[in-house]
Length: 155
Image 1 (cartoon, rainbow, N blue to C red):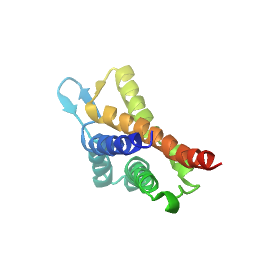
Image 2 (cartoon, rainbow, N blue to C red):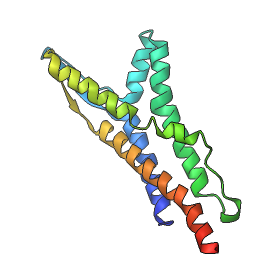
Image 3 (cartoon, rainbow, N blue to C red):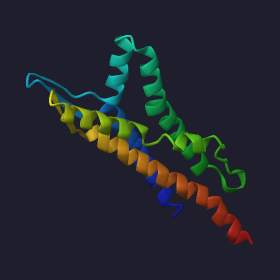
Image 4 (cartoon, helix red, strand yellow):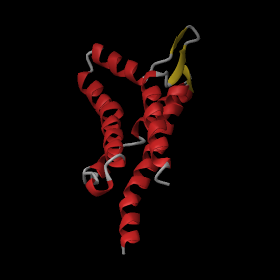
């Protein structure tokens, strides 16, 4: 499993990058207007629209925290066996917010479909972002399990 961790981390990082730049949803409004925002595009639109607090919260939980989490996992995965980097205790708090964006986009799609004024469909960005969340959680579980397996092998 140890040799699988770098591959999973690479896939998670690639999916994360694609998930924040590719369109998340396709929204048609009143049959004349359509939009395909990406996560970065949504944050930029909120910021330029004057919703700085909302833009900051979305950027923090959608881009900054997941990027930090991936960075910490890469650091822990590639640490030397005798010099193992530990994952900070606050890391668990970051893990609790992993699916927040996927749930928010699902709510937007649901609201658009039930309002009758717009239709919305998922786009590849959402699927890449969701794949990143799942792959990151898998890598995290493998990395957390690796020190326990080493300790059992020693005893």
